[in-house]
Length: 109
Image (tube, rainbow, N blue to C red; front, side, top):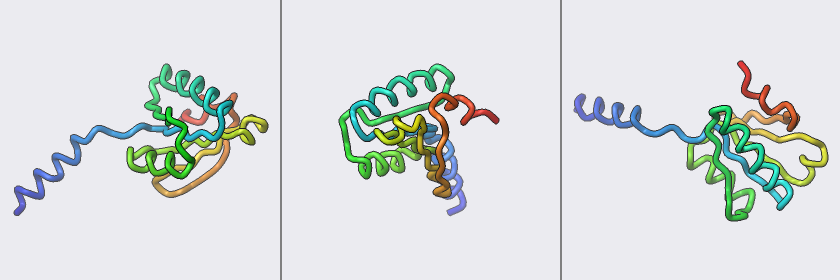
C-alpha cells in the first residue's frame, strides 16, 4: 500500500503544469487585444492560454479551471474602455484589476 501511495505521489509530481494565465475574452475587440497581450506575455516566458473559438465566459472559466491555471484574466469591451484587465486567482478566488499598460508589473516579484 505504501508503494502505491509513493507511485501516485510521483505521478502527480510529473504532471505538466497548467498555464500561468488563461485569457477569457468577451467581444471581438477584447479578443484581438488579448491575443496581442498574450503574445507579449509569452515573449516574457509566461505560459498563457486563451479561447480561440468564441466560447461563452462561463465556458472559458471552466476551461481555465480544468487546465489548472493560476490566474484568469478577463477582458471585455467595458474593461477595454477603462484600460484595465480583471483578474481572478483560481487558488483562492481573489479578484482585482490591473492596468493594461502595466500588465508586465503584475508579474513582478
